[in-house]
Amino acid sequence: MSKKAFNSTLYALITFVVMAAILSTMTVLTFKDKYIAFDEEKLAGNYVDSIVQSGDGYNAYKYTLVSINDKYGDYIRKNYIYPIVYPGYEIGMDTGDLDGYDDSKYMSEATENDDGTLAGQLADALYPYYEELMQQYGWDDYDAVFTNYFNALVTERQQIFGDEYLSDEVMFTALEANVATYGDKLTGTTAVTDEDSGVTTGEDTTGFYQTIYGDDYKITTTTSEPESISNLDEYVAMLDSDVLESYGISASDIADACRVEVTSSLADGTVIYSQTVYEVKVGNTWYVDNITTDTFNFYLSLGNI
Image 1 (cartoon, rainbow, N blue to C red):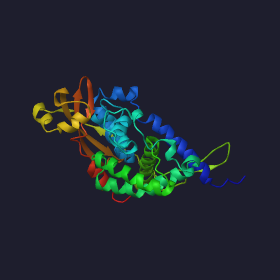
Image 2: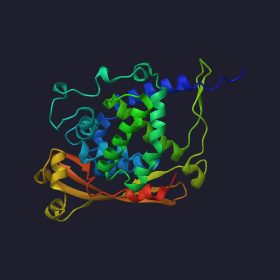
Image 3: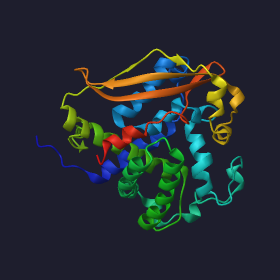
Image 4: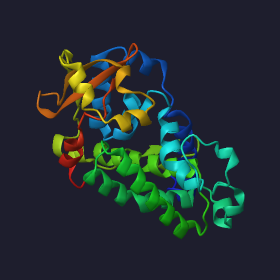
């Protein structure tokens, strides 16, 4: 029996549904993640492994101070999405009291009738810019990434959909699709055929890692013993108090700090990346100190993938 041809409309719809499902789950801190937060080595290892395996510094932030008091997704909404969707919004406001672009009155027919195809076009159009942002900032400067990316999204979406409609789902879906595509370009992809329908989605591609490390590459991440920061007061004094305040904490909340050396290696022992991860302890929980930890060299090393 011959294999059915690729159905772009069905694929777009599937992609849209999958990305919406990711949106509803990716920002939830699971029990496993909470458990990891009590172990300095596991915390550092998981943080770096997320970045190295697929370039996903975006989701790695669930291990950092950004997520200490808000779910990561809520932090992004309050600081970067709501100010665009709701004119006049200030952090702490109830969005229910504001007129936002997520109202159906801003929808064109293109938005109302989109089966995911235009949403896919939006993500595709934004992807080259996402790569530019990774080369310019990496994920350490998330403020620059979110600010520039979402501003570009507004302009691009208006051109594709012909309206001003915006929502957190629209913005998360495009961004997370780009994060996923970036990872696919690193790791390569495999076409998948549904056994029931015979429809094939995706395609077989060779990723950046396969090209330089071989088809059967395997990256393993290892950690050193945590090294305590001897002068905690001096360390904490170097942290940006305004940034800490945006996370809902102050310098006095930090009870301890340490550094962990993390190494990512191939099966033959070749080291492909090393990272010093700084962590701080608030209450009984450890968080990656994303203010101090610098992962930009990883993104810089990838070049134009």
